[in-house]
Image (cartoon, rainbow, N blue to C red; front, side, top):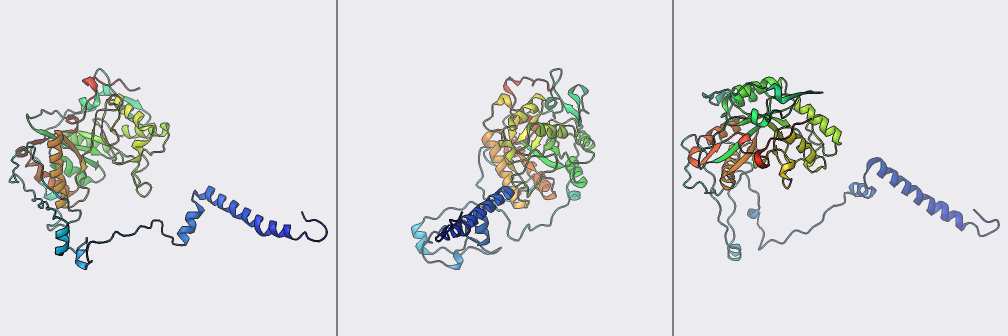
Length: 412
């Protein structure tokens, strides 16, 4: 409002020059936040190329030289450390490089509890020296011995997406479909699970026909003719599992597909996805979950595990630390992924660490993927296990059982 007469010009200037623009700016910022969820201040920093983190570099000890770099070209040796540095800091002994594994004639270990001193080359300089192997070059197995054919009708119930596993007549799928195993005295157990099978015909056939029968094979729920693949694997003596796709840690940059169980899914959505996965095949002992998934931290994760327990299945993966044993299925944590870096040198080091973990804990479990180089190194390593005080075992032989070994109640 403007008073009649003189002296009424200050108020309109204040209202239209200051209050109205500030109001429009606040409304625009609020609308931007509601529409995008982004802080307008962050947008200003992005447009102005502002630095989000500013921290001073710590001063180097002594004069800096180009040869003191932490990174060196492939094949180049690090520069010698100046005398001033060696006087100030005692030298750290370096562990010897791992010896490449060889079939049957591998290095012997004098003590079963001796842990090797190892360092892990992330990327070997110049890559692998040898040519990449092919599945056809791997030696075939001569000891094919089929497991009993499945499924057992009493352990199935019809569901909306296919037959679902249940416990009945005092039996559970994890026991009925397990590979028989007799533990050798004074030997530690190592379980290996090949995940992601069924998506590549060549890789799946190689895993079934060329890996030791104690290696457990886990198939993707997205594979075509999944039940047929599982029957072939059991006919070759392998215990079989199903992959459980969970939300990956870098979602949505990486997506585990439409069957994946997301961290923010409702209980109904989780149950529908789980039943869709379980109905894809039969005769499996349990599920192999995606590692480092945020789904395992959701409130509905333990009820989901409780459902697997009631169905008589086992579970391997992570996310079960601290959970009451009566609330989760028989399970085992994955010690490592053997071929996380698919180079021979790194696979050899990880297999040696897996053996050391088995000696420490008396059992260990690892994931691996169906790659030719992984199978090549695995077969060579398996040939050395008897003289190293360890043996391969199916997953069902290394999981932690339920209290008292009682059978789980029947799933509805």
